[in-house]
Image 1 (cartoon, helix red, strand yellow):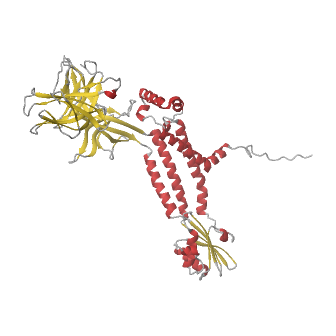
Image 2: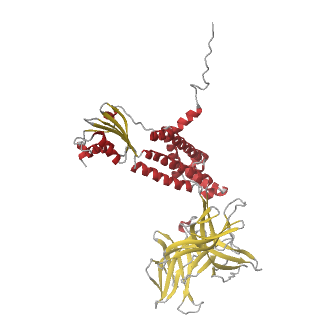
Length: 565
């Protein structure tokens, strides 16, 4: 017996091919919808669930304090939510991984469609069977004079590329095509989506965004937490708030100095016109005028504090009062600072009442020590503040906003509530109880001054550049009111990709809607002409073909529905 050898089959034939399976999975429409659904759910979670503020992510103490607040809100669910990253959705590995998988899926889908699309454009089906002329979705059947020559001439007049594919007896078969290149528009749309995803990922992984609050003429602030040769320092030379004649704020801008190593750049930045320096863009993000330069020296004239006091946007509500004498001469018209607090009987602040003493000249031109004093108290109310005043007779009266109230020979008007910068400082040098409260107000003429309580029995009033010794062993000098700018330092390597994506998406959609591809097959016989075509779903190609027949002189091409509007 003679043995006959047979070729061995490849080991993988008929088996599982992981590469092919992965490729087919990434091209699967259902899998794509699944990925988009997951991304939508993740985005919804990031919107509905509170997300940790970016500045707190790099501060362990602030991060822990914020998470403690979430434990109060979500209870037992807070711990598993934290472990899953639901408080930082857009910074979790699983969200970035999902984003990366979507990018790969879009890339594979685009590449897989490249060869079929090119083949469809360069090698379209030029010949169809006779049955197609009666079953196609877009078709027309009519008689007309002129034969095939008239059809070819009319199609070329409409910018179709026409060729005769075959003849069979007295039948002539034609293939016509217009805007074949428009099918490449889908790649513009796919590429736009891909670049948009890549740009977003680059922004997330390699982008930088940090906001700094920098006062005028203070030491430069460093941009990066870690030192290194690429460290940048930014100082604000001038922070400006533009105000028009009507008192309306019209713009914010800052003159800044950016330094990196031995290189320095000075430029002006606004909200919409950032300063570009060393690969970063620096925007004006905010404006602050609630800072005060304070200098404190001890009994030996040694400086214990010489820096900018930041009120950190903390304010307190005080009444704006106007006092006139019987002749209508204004004796006082400005905000009244809070001098103390009556804490009431409850341990909470719900019954706290602010108290102050209002001292005004007894008459216009009176000596500084010749004053009349009113007791004033106020607390928050629905309409603003509920203000009570008592004169020398000790009889309290409630002031109504805008309504003058007579007290003896004086008329007092509560003109409204104002929010002024106010902050409590727990380690103020010279404070009797270790803490003092600083308020910053302005006089009627617009001159700023500091009102400090807690240093001694009487409050200290600090006018600009005037040293004050309240008897605490320290001298306090309010140098000036300081303006500051919030500047946003950004680097976004993905913005170029995103702008290109927007342009490509516009081009792709424009091609899709305004130059749709049309393919047309025609069978012309001496008795009838049959047309069948393929076009985008947005076109009414069948009606267009019947109207084409009518333009050739056919009387039976149009249907009743074509004659309607």
